[in-house]
Amino acid sequence: MNTETTSDFLGACHEARKIVELMPKLPKGMKPGHIHVIDIIYRLQQGDQAVRVSDIGAALHVTNPGITRLVNELVELKAVQKEQSETDRRVFTVSLTATGMKYYRKYLEEYHRTMAQKFSGISEKDMETAARVMHEVYRIMSNGNMELD
Image 1 (cartoon, rainbow, N blue to C red):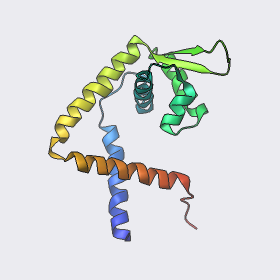
Image 2: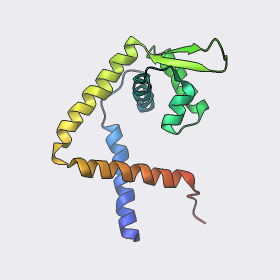
Image 3: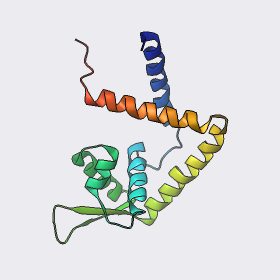
């Protein structure tokens, strides 16, 4: 790949970061990362099994201490309920509270539905390609040393 294409792509990444900043204002104390965790909890709960903190970390490719911090913040915000396993005291399961479900509906279901309508002029294939490329670039960059020699 040539450097001009790489430069254009990295410029688009800066714009992508700005896209996140254009999302609806979250309630006091909420961060975009919290909404992402709520989304993962909701999705994992659809499988009819208890959702462990480690399941969330695995789904997001984030270490357990990082997820534990976010989950604890969501507990403080009353969006998530956390319970310690009776059989293994090291294991915690989480579930969305009524407040967490309200956030899911507003900041994920409603927002994604609105954005899908706004993006209707972009083909499904182009959106899938953009998402796939962003995920792949993130994987490449997060697995290697990106420092300049």
